[in-house]
Amino acid sequence: MTDEGVMSTDLKNRILHVDGDSFFASCEIALDKKLEGRAVWVGGGRRGDGIVIAANRAAKKFGVKTCMPCFEAKRLCPSGVLCHPHYDEYRRISAEMFRVLEEYSPMLVPVSIDEGFLDLSTMDSVVWRNTTPEKYVREISERIAREVKIPVSAGLANSSRLAKLATDAAKPGFLEVKPGDEKEFLKDRSVRELSGIGKNRQRSLAALGALTFGHVTKMPSPLLKQKFGIWGTQLWLFSNGLWNEPLLLEVKDRTTISSNTTLPYDEPDYEAALTFALSEATRLTGQLRREQMQAREMSLTIRFEDFSEAGGTHRFRAPQFLNSVINAHLEEIFRGVMSGQTKMVRQIRIAFWNLERLDTQPTLWGRTDAERWGALDDAANKINKQFGNASLMTGAQLALRALDDTHKNPKAKCPFVPQREMVTKLWGTDADPLAHKGDWEQRLAKVSKQIQFRH
Image 1 (spheres, helix red, strand yellow):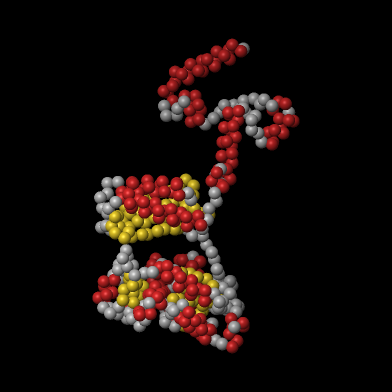
Image 2 (tube, rainbow, N blue to C red):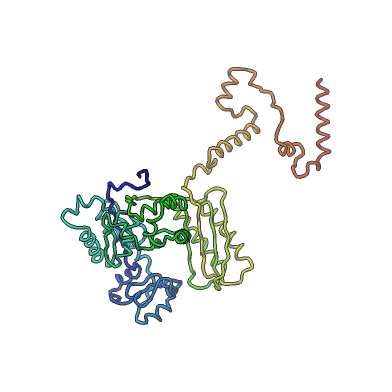
């Protein structure tokens, strides 16, 4: 970056974003040729007739939208077809699509089941000498349509963020934002289109009068930085077409894992619901172990037949990965939640979060140096207390005793100890010190007589 905060544009990054069009609906058409040319939507819910989770363009022309009840979609488009989801097939088709994409770039970054980014930065000198970006991307799209049987749209720009905006503007088809045209392309587009922008930031920008990227370019960069931090500077650079971002493949550990399952029928048998919850927790725990992760916290939420909910959480003392421990606490939460309930169970949600890398060995002595040394000191004290003060020594202690005989039988230290520990040792309790005052006084008197006898 320069002194003005402008990212260097010496290297012209060219990032391609590829997105499957109405992916779930397109997969259903690929699975059943009879659906070609018809309005199609995929329904969610326990029986696949709850809400619309995907709709193809033919259905959208009738007003069918995602999150719309399926019965409403049928009212808007009586000739349309409702398909129950086939998630295993969607995953298989997704894998086939990415196998095609990875042949066209040395860098492929999948971001969801139906979209990914390709780094085409060096193609102008290696591949595009006898073709153009548009022809190259059209070849990719046609091959996916021919081999995978689904349509895709694409956008090409100098960053992944801008490439995604280009794809949205191109659907269905392809759009390239050529070098130098970034600011012009963005100026009339709403900042709401930027991937990852939240409602709070949208409202804050609107309060400043920034509704479009063009508005952002007219604002002072220091003002945006003061208001939004580094993100404000990035937004200013992006809006001015100066955010020349390379594509990076980052494999990050997940921070949470969850399961949200609507039972096939409202379940009146709570023990059956518990059995399912324990089974699902075991499945999630197995997934964590396969990814070499463990959870610090967990939660269980039960949704009842009337859509009311109840739940609970638990925080483990140390990150946990054992089924026996996790399921024991899950059952405890479940029984606490269901105590006094009479309604049937509709849905069970389980979540693990605050995840950490799985490391089984440190849990034996502690997870930090302080915990490990504390555990070691505690074990050494117990051994010396049981077998004598010289039973376990450090190398320094042993060397010291060898050098000087006076250290073989060291004198007792002054018995100053914390008050609570002293009270406990003398009176046997720290709850009511005076409860054993008489015994303590007799013990002191006995010690006093012994000292007098010695002298």
